[in-house]
Length: 249
Image (tube, rainbow, N blue to C red; front, side, top):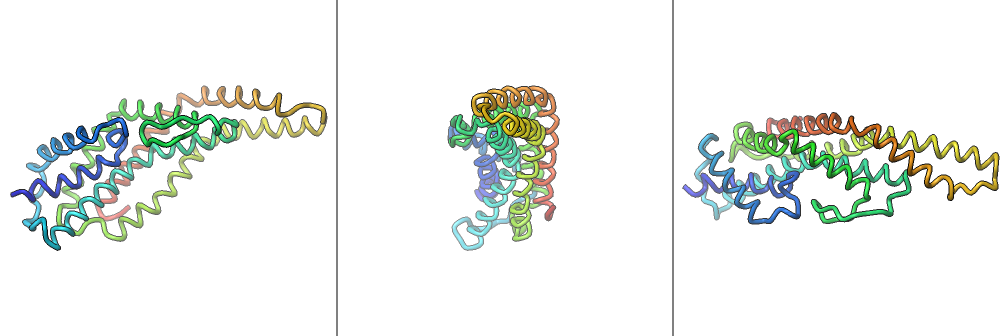
């Protein structure tokens, strides 16, 4: 029956539309549709049989909306990991006076600071190194057993948990950026004291290159810990996506 393939396809396609890597602007829509069809063919034989609901009816429309919302919610929960690094890069760039140096992010198509773009590229490489794309597909396949088609969808509790989880972006971004921000704060305080002691000192001519050099130096020193932080954040996102379809975090 067509609905046996339609409902899983809607959930899979919705998740791939927003999931990291798969939803990048440089990935053609045809590739995403083909991947969604391929995953549907693989997943359908091993999941509970979807209910026999007429697609073009009231109950069929409700089931379709539930599958799309479930897929979008899971993909967004995983996509937030990259938003953490983007926001952390914006915080660091602002303190390094590099917020005006921006590039177009190929994943989202919007302008982000150069520091954010650097961390996004680094996070993408770590994501692929950890087989994150395969883990996303695994979580998606597991969701059909934890939240079968026609079981009612996420509900208000799950959607509200996703909204509350958005605050995790800010706390994680501050945790990631705080070493560099703290170092730059010490530099600014030092130049503030120097300005009081020697008012003729041109702080803008001296402080800007010093802040840049120190900022890049601290970034270089903290670079080995990026992979560990990304692994931690991504594990938290995977656990949240699983809990989302298991009945709520």
